[in-house]
Image 1 (cartoon, rainbow, N blue to C red):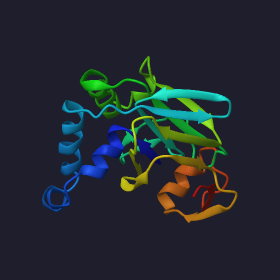
Image 2: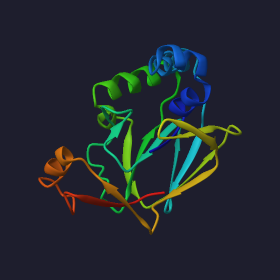
Image 3: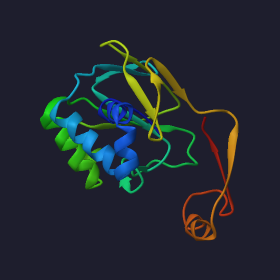
Image 4: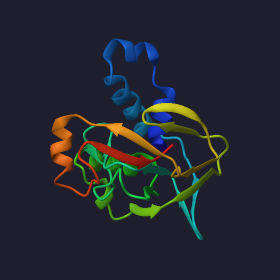
Length: 181
């Protein structure tokens, strides 16, 4: 999962001292600071021949964001595509709405949010260097290109998940193969 916008700003600016003191609560406090004092971000997301101008984007191969929150209900670790969640809104109102919708597992259902499937995505910033985060860790600055790797990653899964995955579209309950960097 790769994110740009308010979530990447939060990860890049969270206080490590506060994180040691209160754990994940540090991200909540920094996230609130980013909502009330937003940085105007303007990204161009290129997917094939289509270009999207947004203030936030999350590229994911998984349904969940931040552990428990559903960001893209149709995403699948076994799919040969990535889900690109495009959020055009900026400012206190849009960021508050996106944050609340995420906690209610309804971000994807917002009228201005789009979810696009892609195999390769290029993201650039029109406002100078902007941070990006990968799985909740600060991971450099834009521009970036995101794509599926042709080399699968083998994952061992616990028996409880194996039982669950045998009831879904996963190819093997004991071993999942995903192509991701």
